[in-house]
Length: 137
Image (cartoon, rainbow, N blue to C red; front, side):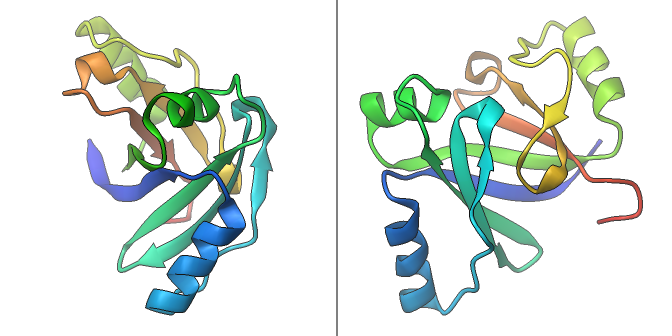
């Protein structure tokens, strides 16, 4: 069902400053920032082994990441797992009583299909499921 940890997401106030920190201290190569208008964020990613770190900055205070930052400040925001067939997994999770934030997948950063699971049903951790385009990953 779960293939791997696709990325760990960190909510940040200033995407450029956060990306610069990882570039300067750890020598990573960050991707180009990408706006995901539907989620109200600008995001960039970088590789760490077979997984990634995603830095997300809100574009508006009423977005989920904007509300998170206002309540908790910068830091760990979510874990994303790569899956094979997002619709099938969402259907199975819903049938088993898992609280979904997204009943239907939508397009996230990098053009991948994503859906979120509510933290209440996932040990307090916001969980994202990611399906890569066929033939990638």
